[in-house]
Amino acid sequence: MIPAGQKNTDLRTLTSELVACLEMEQRRGRRFIGLGSAGREALASLGGGAVHFETLEQLQGAVQRCRRCPHLRGRTLAVPGEGNPQARIMFVGEGPGQEEDREGRPFVGPAGQLLTKMLQAIQLDRREVYITNRVKCRPPQNRKPEPEELQACFPFLQEQIRLINPLLLVALGTIAAQGLTGLDRGTSALRGGSYFFKDILCIPTYHPAFLLRRPEFKRQAWEDLQKIRREIDRLWAK
Image (spheres, rainbow, N blue to C red):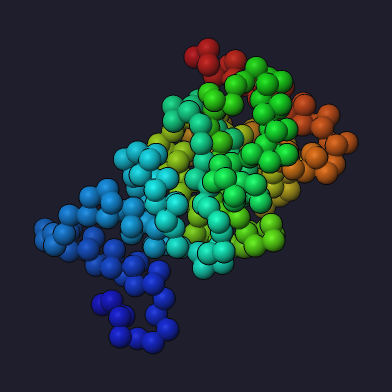
């Protein structure tokens, strides 16, 4: 039963209950409404569970209207991600910064400029990859995303990965690396290894923003980039 008459019932709880009821009735052979793509976007923007879309454009629309997480309503613009929808390599960062929040695009500030140079160093054009973040909205004062925010946003990242279906994932920084590897370790402990998100190879390395603050780690980052290039050559040759 949908607890609509209860006090202090939040919208996300109501939406989750509604979706559960509709799915149960559909399994029983009864279908009351046909949601269509717009309906799926609306429910995804309010709910808290898994999401499913037919295209990246539908997913981006849901992200831009998302109200799953009350702590991120102070955003200017959501930042779904950008790049080649058929990219064979996907870069995942932590979350948008001030410039990204203003423009609605990932990695457009100083860290984005460094990322572009990192891509060029291993013969990659930014236009041929896909770039996104684990959370799609800027946390207040650029703080680290809280567990509730990570949980609310992760289904969108999972669906992006499913739709793009890359051969290689690169996790930029600890927040992205922990989400994709499932391991509670820092970047320094994870880098150098190879992991899998489902059946997709995942390589963690330092976030460009960290490298701007701690340039002494750029040598290790260069080693990671060389490893990424080797894996690109190996996977692309198959």
